[in-house]
Image (cartoon, rainbow, N blue to C red; front, top):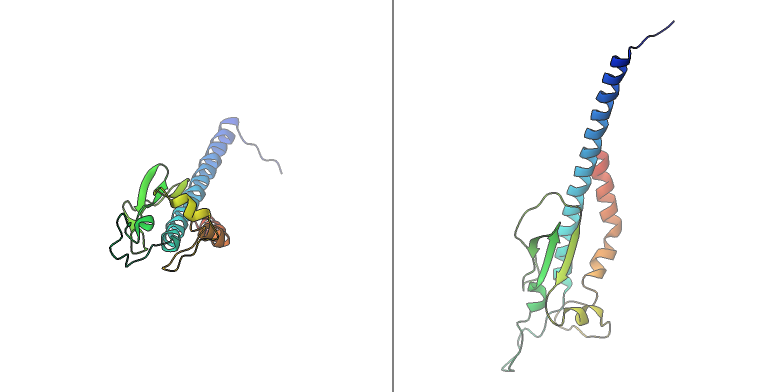
Length: 155
């Protein structure tokens, strides 16, 4: 048995296969970005909840900051756009419900955010902890990977 394929037919089949493969790659990329965004919103929520708060009843001391100022200074930035911010109550406020992104930045913008994050010996009797960004990210890295892999398989 002999099969003959003309050059133009081979080219058409090759182009069809390439279109299909490109479509599948785009689908996998979109699925992974959706899963990444979902996980970053979840991690950001844990970061805000983990950020330390000061004494909720400061009395009459001058220059006392609001107890949840650090928490409310938190932001989640996806692909350069701020999409969520923290709140004093310890939960994130979604500003822009983005569904796909490939880069995330979680940050807190108070003068003392960095030192509160890094000082393991600080006492936080009113809530929160040190490593309030790093901890939630590291604690969830396996789930983040699994969610992204699952979405890529199902995407």
